[in-house]
Image 1 (tube, chains in turn red, blue, purple):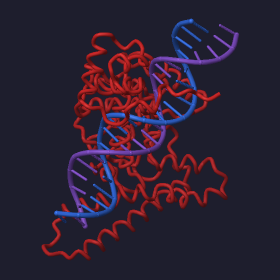
Image 2 (spheres, rainbow, N blue to C red; image 1 turned 180 degrees about the horizontal axis):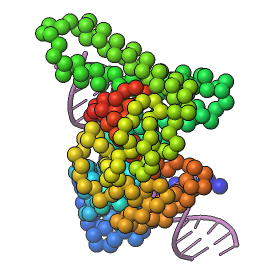
Image 3 (cartoon, rainbow, N blue to C red; image 1 turned 180 degrees about the vertical axis):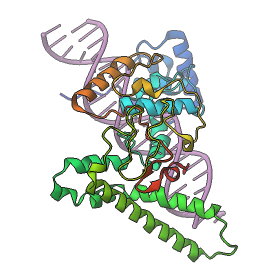
Image 4 (cartoon, chains in turn yellow, blue, green; image 1 turned 90 degrees about the horizontal axis):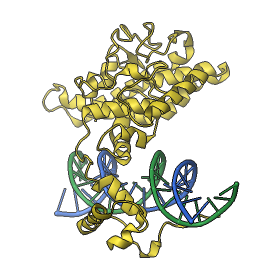
Length: 325
DNA sequence: AACCACGCCAACCGCGTTTGA
DNA sequence: TTCAAACGCGGTTGGCGTGGT
């Protein structure tokens, strides 16, 4: 049984809303509320689908919406909640007054995902790429492990090359005190060398992660609490930080410590007790943590891997964390 | 000046869930 | 209890603006 459309598609206007339409919708809702979205366009004199009206109202016209840039605190909140909740945008948005799920989703997809990738962190699991590879490696039988580095390179190569070489090399070359009149071909050669170098570093790092699984730390290195752990690829001295107040987005992340109310301890380990989290959040986080404790399923748990002394793929974390967007 | 590539974001689409007759 | 209608959510798309060549 097919689902019937929510409205007559032939008779409805689509695409961008005009200010006149916005006015009609807003004034109608101000008078009558949002009881029945199917009737609203008819009664308001709009040739729009009720669903389209609802979206326009909830994502744009609602008077309590914020329309400006996301603040540092909001950004931190999104990243930390995403580490716990995944793509549950409506729940994440509910913790950010004035932001819609669409706002949060767009912000995540266009900004935050890239930031994390640029730091060598998988935006899905919130783990370092290198650690993910090592986890996979330890789970595979030896004959398959041998090919993992190549496969991983295939997966991550494009993005990592983009992040590690193109933008950064461009930046560095512009910043460098290259002698006046350095030829374009010199620049290109430098770029090419850097790229090859980065590929080789990634290759080495992954190979080591695979060949030396015993270097894996006994506990999750990204958890704020726990024994100091060596990064299995490179030195990670002084990690994790002794104090739990570190921020998700370290200094290289573009923040200077904004005093976000969210504290990693809220979602570290099995206890996520954020007192200021509202609505469905508490239950959901408990649910997530329960699943994690049962099946060792990773739910992010704070993603506290941002130590400038950490080295991913033999690249200093400082490099990875430099703003590149 | 023209073209192209890319990023951003508003809007759409389809599916799962909830509601109410 | 069942089922159609409405609602809500997350993924995807398309258009616009901007910067680079």
